Image (cartoon, rainbow, N blue to C red; front, side):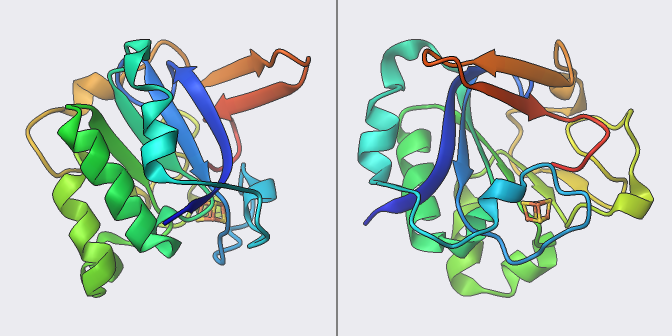
Length: 183
Ligand code: SF4
């Protein structure tokens, strides 16, 4: 089983507690106005990779956990579940962003299974009218943080910054985190 991935950040400090592998899934049907990740909306094949290969490459880098964002991770529920199972088996923490509300996830048996392996879920679509630049780990006030295990609490989400600029080996520049736009 392969995941369709938009991009990976091997070591981010602004996408959850500690240093994290951030995985952006490709494909989202929500089209929230002001979305920070427009390039992730298309459902075209971008990069196909198995959860095993994806995690295996980063397991020895000293990361605290993985953050899954998008795109919409729950539109690839089988691959997401496998990725989360593997992360949990390696004692990596898991933080997942979704444009669905937690109730919408719970309504779908396949999606709901993923919740068993998620430490923190940030739910709900980005809403430009509820934009609040000072919010922790999210862009608009309708988005909620759900601590699904006891691993983290709110204070763990105070990160060293809100936006990270990463310059890749070939000179490409990527911005990640939370600015005045949605994520
Ligand atoms: S904010 Fe998230 S849910 Fe909304 S369009 Fe962008 S990627 Fe999709």
